[in-house]
Length: 235
Image (cartoon, rainbow, N blue to C red; front, top):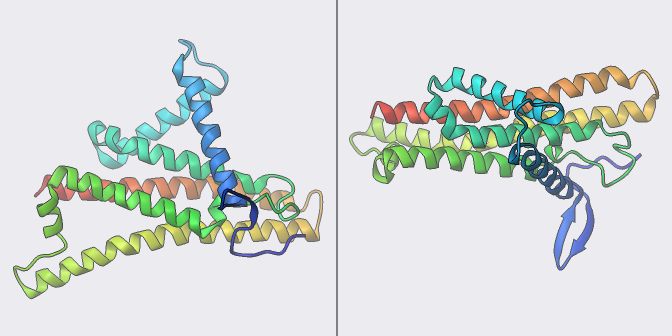
């Protein structure tokens, strides 16, 4: 059994670029999603079947779910590409921990169990949400939310708002990382101690956890976006 470490393991170096096991799988999962979605939706069949039927079900379900949060199809269409991408990427990354050989082969590790991956996704997501806020509100009005000099109370509240933006990155990344790293360690330990049927309940549990964590991450981004645009709408 491989040594369990928080840091991802280096598997090769290309021209000075260090490739870790989690970075490798991030690239592979991303490429697989791009190829699959392009193949399905480039020339979609009028009567969907197989993988097209699956992706159309996922897309329609996500659209309806995000609609229930934003209350507007226009807002849903704006945030949907980011939310759907996050959901599919994280879900695919989470499922990797179910692959046999986890903890045996160094190359096998879920990207979601790497803090670098979760921090990067959280940072990109929060920056994107703030971009949408600036797009609707304007730069100066947006900055006025954080730097309000109308009074000491308003100034203090603005600073708290600014701190909360950074705390969102920390909470999003640590939630996903903590759940997936703990789950991966649990699977490695249980699979190392026992074989055959005993690990199956844990595999089923992690399958559910992987889906829920991907959905929670994407949902929180939609919620943050909805709050930002709601504040914009009301000036």
